[in-house]
Length: 496
Image (cartoon, rainbow, N blue to C red; front, side, top):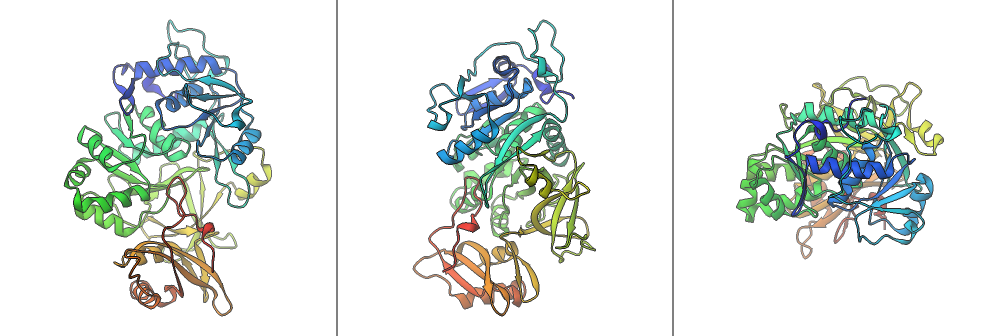
């Protein structure tokens, strides 16, 4: 296949490729440092990367990919039991880490390779050809499209995490499709503060700019001050998750500098979970900018997006990306008959950006696909007549069957968030002898001393949506349980 990172050889050597705080690498420096890593890991079956939000993580991942060696990104916040499972399952031959980073006990038995961002060495060509004058290319540098690039572990909801094996063709396909949808070019400078052990932060947020030949500035840790600084200093794109955009929306009324900086951006992108419509509206009102959303999963990479040249419709995740086939199906697997904006179905996808399977889990892999090769996402959605997709939630946690209706939790959550007395909201279903399931709203009130009552919230939802979608039970919380990417962990919400 062609190189994943053609810009490492394109004569753009003096352009800054990566910047983390006050540390940066040009394309020439990144090529040398990643080439040194590639030489050290050549021939390995897999390598783990201790994926801190640092320059070393990016260098280590790029180096391993140049060598054709699959990478297992490790979450530095993982507990020892989870780490032990991941290491036993993926069996990496070494762990790449920043010099001086302490590693937990489960990694003690692995060979440690410290990453030197200023390391020098020939840049192996991951397309299989050595550059003129370069040293020997590792034997497995001529990687095939179907060769594994990453093994990313998905959060286990019903068991230990599973390793999704993502091939090289999937990285190229999804990043090139996003370039088409977002008009993403080498002139773009991306800023974000996302973790680097997930698809969002690592694949889109680091490998994406490098494949385009552009630049990425990582904040280390998200802050509105950092966003303001970087957008004022020439950054053109911002990636974030809903929690980050919610904090931006909350800060905007008192921060005109932030509003002005966001107004200068070419593209604001939110992903990893649905961005509440209320936050869309607040950001647009303050900045004149519309946040666009996209939809993907670890196993599929990116499936849909609002296009840069399309209509930014809040509450939707846009249209299928180039190369992605998408359909909605009923519970029995039959296709949803029409795109009417109302009928809920499970999303199934096909295309070159799919993973090849779960590592060491042929049973789980077989269960994830239909006989004709469609991946069962478990996500529920409706589709508008013009093809726009609107997510309503996960089949396992967000689809509520109440009184004969299939109801998506997402639209009720959006309606609740429009109430001035609601700061955060989550919606689940619980068994009901009459309805099958009743709708439960979990509310973080804007004023804990004076929360809205259940009747008021039920009427609020019924007026905006339909009476059968009103919550029957309201439970108050100080905060909603969230994971590292800001997703609400609904399984942690227990019915009292």
